[in-house]
Length: 339
View (cartoon, rainbow, N blue to C red):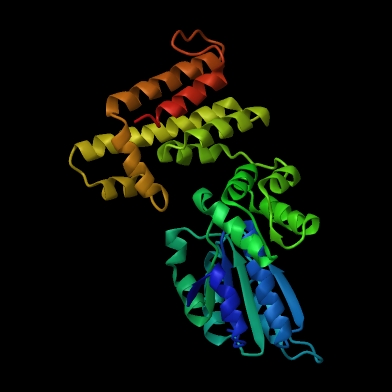
């Protein structure tokens, strides 16, 4: 069966462990916490011996069968942890996981750690077999809009709380970095007693540990988040990010919007056009709203400005561009948000 990461604690509290667990997701903090929770529950249930297998491209999958069958003389119940960083077991690995899902014994608990799988891999026979044989823990990313509430719940675990402006402030400072958020929340527990924290207490103790991700720009553009666009580009500039990469990311998003405008204008349903252009998940609704804000001509003009900016970056004359390329990029991205 499949459960969400926030349901894992309740599942483990029942005391009836499955013989196979999968933790899949790209959010490092939440994946680590889920894996630790399973390890702790396994240890409490008598699975005291632990074998860790790193399944890289040259991994011998027969080692999985050997590890499951080779409990020590002093520990009949043992935990076998398989780390699959690519999420792709290959032909031999897929066959080994199919067999393992069907034959794994009750005295061995298997923990398979992997990144978020794409749709094809998630629908593969080995993934379906593993999920049917045990518990698949889906670790979802924490979206920016949900980050203040996530921080508030984490503070609640340590019997602290903070006003909404303080939660928003902390979310802004650790944007895109849950590990940093965890560190700052833990620091608040060490600095202050349980209870309500003030905005000043939070602001004084939190460091600016924001991780500005150039690939977060497209989402900020289609969501119309002008503040986030400005902060992200300013942060990228301060951190020494290469301007051509940021320009390429913005240009690609504009091209996608232009293609969607053309396809939907020709009568194709938005859902079909978006799927063909690999627009899905949380981006789907935001992209549809973005198409309503700008005309095809406006988007084409912004893409033309990107072309002019590319000339400026290369040292060529560009009459229509601001002399500061970062300011020009900011204006282009902000113009995509204009209603």
